[in-house]
Image (cartoon, rainbow, N blue to C red):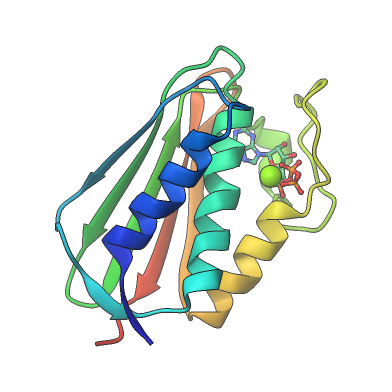
Length: 149
Ligand code: ATP
Ligand code: MG
């Protein structure tokens, strides 16, 4: 069913902001004010919620998290950027495998399933996910989902 992905992204962010659990702010920018595409609402909400809660909870100093939405002819691209603890190089290889958690998570709780679900849901949409990360500097996840008019 066709939905406005900009509106859905905003709604997902607003829900997260309502919870008092996270101190940091989420800064949203989009190159379009409205964008209609056929995408499963539940799947996209789950993808964004997982990536945003990761960005928030692995930013122990409470730095703001950024989410940027961009479009080209074929796909929409979500960039989720944090300045948190980062992912050590040794842990980057198997990050999308179930129960895999990096060695620097310390006391931050989690099950190691979020990214596995995210990867599955992105595959359902025939999209792709990648990330760049540096320990103690931060992480950027990039999700690309094909546009279906
Ligand atoms: P949950 O199942 O509750 O989401 P989790 O957050 O530990 O638990 P994933 O979301 O699958 O599991 O993430 C896997 C691991 O990847 C995390 O444990 C963490 O080590 C690392 N990670 C994911 N996102 C980030 C991020 N934004 N910054 C730093 N490390 C991250
Ligand atoms: Mg997680």
